[in-house]
Image (tube, rainbow over all chains, first blue to last red; front, side, top):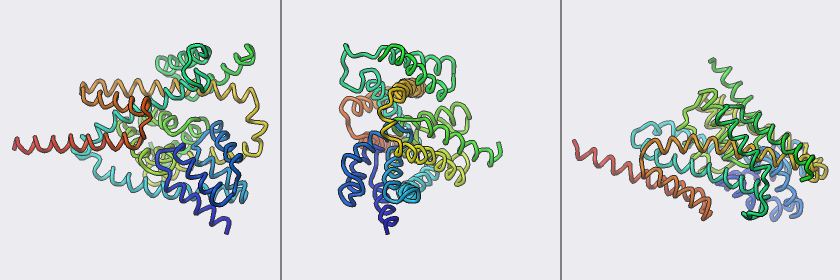
Length: 187
Length: 189
């Protein structure tokens, strides 16, 4: 019974969270905290912080965290499956439509106006993370610049752009360099 | 390249990307683009942008949605399943482990320094992808498309307009442009 409840609750989350992780948080909260009381609000806040420091989509993280707590590993898998099913079905349908009409001339015209917007969205996501990293999560403030982080961003950009280095290796190196500097300089 | 090898490549690359990418759908989408489009040449760049727009407009996790479309395009239904599995397994395993050790994890200085340094690296990856893509838009020499790109950026970044509303607006502009194009062609005949 608990498995079915978990499955259906995350099916709903999967169906109604349009627009990525942060759009899903209130939907997850309404199911797991308000409706079923699987976790308390303080645990839910912990969950959001854990999701921020672990890789992967926040929704998958939430399904795993809540599923494990309520019904062990099986619960985690069932909640994750419930979350994934609606999006996989809808994405498959959209993909099939795209496949069928995407190469038509009229569709290419339409898409040629959407693509610049996607570029803008990626740029905006990058700049949001940059501000968060350089100004320590706060407002933009000229007195609180983390110059070491700024230098790391610039160096990493040069390594990826000019020297075509592997982005994952560069990213891991950034983590290592900042950890060493942070410990040495007591940041 | 054989289909089996493609499926394995999709699975392993998504497993790696999903294990190390923090910070939401656009981050993972940037890594998928760099890996599958720039490095392995299995996807066209334009298609990748279309997938991101579709992924963003569908329910669910943008990272998974983007990955499964890329997987499907490269190797059909098995590619889609490989992409979904590769994207989902790392966060499930990592979160299951971390949720047991959370108190040790969150307060650890080394962990938080390392994560912050990685975030700096993520910025560099996203800016690299942005420069490439924005350069392509600029090269179309279509002032209208460049204005749309700038307007979308200001709307989302400065005014925090809902991303789906912005995509819907560009869809409307695109449909209008396609209709006008068709009308002009009709007159020529």
